Image (cartoon, rainbow, N blue to C red; front, side, top):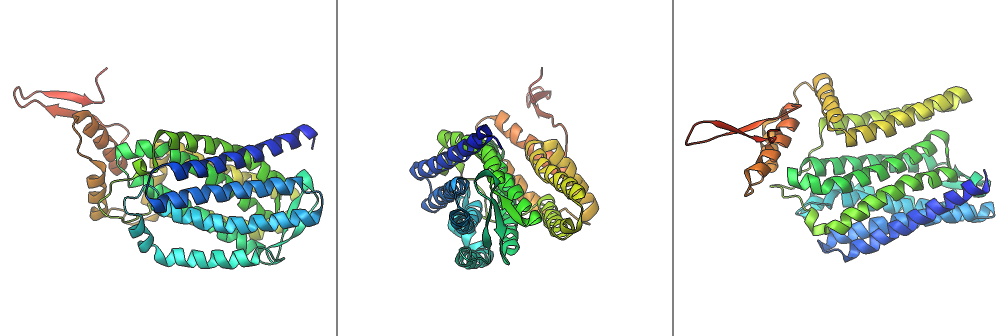
Length: 377
C-alpha cells in the first residue's frame, strides 16, 4: 500500500470520527425528549470513539499497542450496539418510555449480553491479538470472537428492522421529514454490518476494512447532520394512536435469510479454495449491500419484493386491524385537500401495491368531477 492510500485511510477515519462526535454534541443541543436526546448523543459519541480507536490501531507501531486498541474497539462496539438498539425503539416516537416498557424483555437480555461482552472484550477470548501493523494489521479473533461478532450482526439487523418499522408507521408528512435521517442510518448500519460480516466469515478483521468503511460513514454523517440542522429531535415525533411496533413480512423474511446465509457461509468458506472463497464473499457483499440500498431507495423494488414474499411465504398476510390502523395513521387532517390527497396516494400505494393513484373530487353544485391529484398537466 502506497503512502497516498495510507494517508487517505487516516483522513477518512479522522474525518468520520470528528463528524460523528460533532453530531453527538450537536444532537445534545437540539431540543427534544431528554431520553431520546441522551440516547441519540450517546450513540453518536460512542461511534466517534470507535472510529478514533480504529485510527489509533492504524497508527500503532507494535502488535501489543494495536491489540490494546483493538480490545478497546471491542468494548466500545458492545456499548454502541445496545445504545443504537435502544435509540431505534424511541427515535421519532411520541411515547419513548412506553416503547421501552414494551421492549423490556429483549432490551434487558441485550443489556445483559452487552455487559458480559464488555467484560470479556479486554481478554484474549474475544481479541487474541493483532498480526502486522499499520494498514496491514489484522485483528485475530479469540475463542468467543465469532460469538461476539454474531451478536453484533443480530443487533444491527434488529436496529434496521426497528427503523423500518418507525418509518412505515409514520404518516405521509412525517415520512418526508424522517426519510433523510433514515437513509443515513441505513447506509451507516449496512456499512458496519458488511464489515462485521467479513470478520465473521474470515475469522478476522482487517483494519483496512474499517478505514474503507469510514468513507460511507462520513457521507451518512453529512446527511444526518444536515437533517438534524433543519429540524429538532422533537420535530421528528410520529403521531401514532398506540405505541405498537409491527414488523413487516419483508423485514422479517429478509432478516431471517440474512442470518441463515451468514451461518451457512461461516461454516462453508473455510473449506473452499481461495478462488471460490473470494467469489462467494464478493457475491454475498453485492447481494446484501446492493440489495439493501435498492430496497431503501426504490419504492417500486420494495413493493415487488413485498408482493413476492407475501404471495409465496405467507398464507394470509391480511390483518384488518393492522390495515385499519394504517388508514387511521396515514390520513392526517389538514387544511388543504391537496395534502390529504397526497396522503391518500401514499396509503393506497402501500395497501394495494398500486403503481399510480388518481383522485377526483365531485362538485356538489354541478355534479362534475374535478381531478385534484396528481394535478392535470
